[in-house]
Picture 1 (cartoon, rainbow, N blue to C red):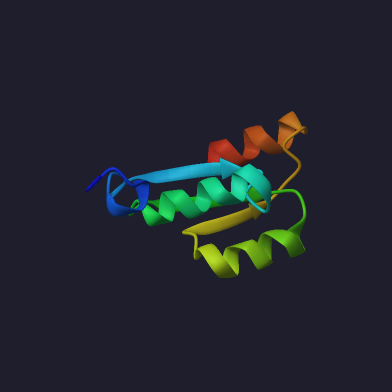
Picture 2: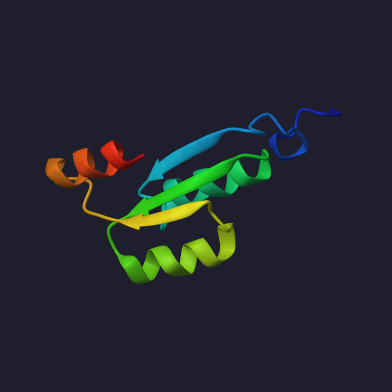
Length: 81
């Protein structure tokens, strides 16, 4: 099937996606897929060391370490974006 594989498309060129929980699991894979589709990614995660390791692989536009269960931190983050 030509063209049906997600990594063959550049559907996210000129787009930026914020991925919360991006240092492992589904979040990290989502960040990888965004980059593979030509998009930029902002990676957000709680653990700064894990986030740094994941970012070294993904090469995001930026990273932010914060606790997504803390609504004040989330509000501050999104007000800066």
